[in-house]
Length: 283
Image (cartoon, rainbow, N blue to C red; front, side, top):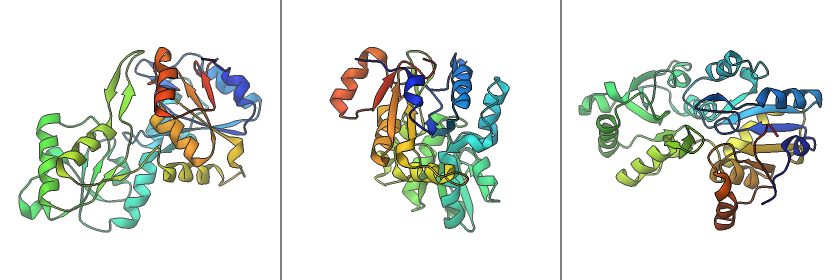
């Protein structure tokens, strides 16, 4: 398997979308060498953005993480998250009533920014009169609740009512170390869909809607063609297939979800083929 130099690849594009987990950061913090790569991109006039399925925090909080770790190039304007897309959907669809959510208090900021009345699943009373006030359920994060008690409560809420369910993060897993991953919101959504026999509304990569949203975002102040934009990610089933389907070039990096000695096998068996493969964006 041939590994490309990321910096050499990047010179062919005007704008780059970076996934966050596994590309820019992991459970230990910022992946080494990222600032040097950003300096290289700035020196060559290449714009870059963080395109993430992370709906656990607001764009301000996500950007603050990078700023706190010395990556000053990432501010709120550089953050494009699936939570922003879910927020826009809810703004048009939910006018009154309560919004129940699964996740942390920090993740609920997307809902509270629209002055919606929110209630975490852990505080929800399954009394029928109370559940009738719920207009939508939003899955935001894999933390902030009791996995047994609150997932069971979620299942029973969905059995008793016909409220729509919005999944603000389609990721199945996210890397927590060099060779370990943890279950993400997308996996919780898949479990709940299977149990209750209902289809949820998903936002995030690999859906074309997420890439359309990101493409419109970067075209607000400048004009880009698809062939000038590159998607960089660590996961074939979200970042790479999403970029491929949207019609932009893709780079698979081996610093996150995709284990280096298994990358070639997964590419062959899934049929999801990136345009380039790099060890990381620091090379």
